Image (tube, rainbow, N blue to C red; front, side, top):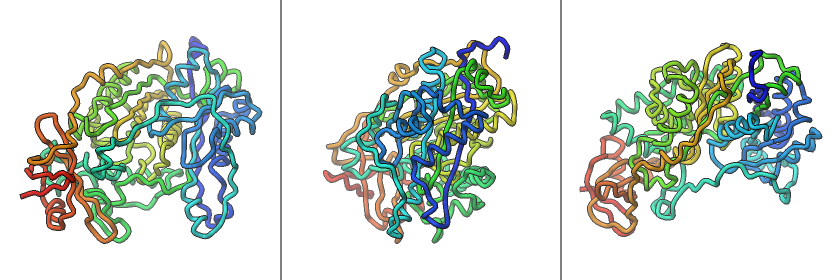
Length: 491
């Protein structure tokens, strides 16, 4: 440690909180949650002077109306900080750690605060009770930096064919994984439920989890009044949960500043390596529905830069909005599904606060590594529909040569894409599908359809008999006809 480069980036403090008061008049706004959580991170570091001296405060965009919350936080602590607000995407917390590590190493910034918060749960319930949670009005301030590129979620064609939300696409990916593995519907549902039960078991022990009720694989797999089917094969217990009040924060600085602030060496956790990469934003153009070139290339590059073999990872937190995201991530990185793949419990159980989940996973990983010295942890992040990705390696022991990062996008972009066929009518083959359910049962089948090699269209059906058959038997590879409106018939 004595030979450590003074510009080496280090995480010195983390904080997390949740609020779920019995009396909604005790709930605080998201801005106050951010402030309290950052102050908790400063106390974790052992010094609030880090807040006064912070020269960059970066907020993860949330479901609130503040136009530059970092400025309000900076004023609270008397800091002369550059303010930043992220764009949308679950990848943003890890991307900001990667960016901040590079900037600390380069001397562009010295103390960086990253924070996000959501109070969706309390706001929704307060409205129902015609109550008002005091909220700071800020609409005209402009952040010094907009952090990240805007995420396009859907093409016009996809929207026209009913593919507008994560709950539509991720179960569709799941069917493609099932088919690629050669599993029956029942084998697959059993396996995925067992995987998700391991996430639940971690969440039950996590003091910052939103949902801590133990669930067996059968509880997760089978639809029930409290766990209805959403998009086959996903019940509610397999979907990300954003109806919550949670906040998390990270404080990073240079090693020299950590020493100057008097932060105990036990608290130091080093970002070793970080990478970012995008798959094509249009799912219509993906080569297939069960893989991710960006995870494969950028994720493995992160491990390579950190000089860590995948089997040498001691702790892992894979982004876990839906089971398909975990399986795609594990498959591309070479991680066994038999090992523990979360330190929090994942977005279903620990909680999925929109763009901010990974701030929680990094904060949790920091505590895990402090309590297990000289081990290495990997956090992965995902925005969109397995679209935007970020990866980070962490350890309580620094890497020789400091933080490492490398651009991967050109190699990712070189991978083949499919061509959308929005005007196609006639013969198609089902490539992937899901059946969306309402509270009364099946409502619509959504399908990815192969027109020819490397050519894809989208279709749907509300035929009750077809939907019933699709949740009982495998329909991938089945031929059908699509009309001009995108309605599919299967003979």
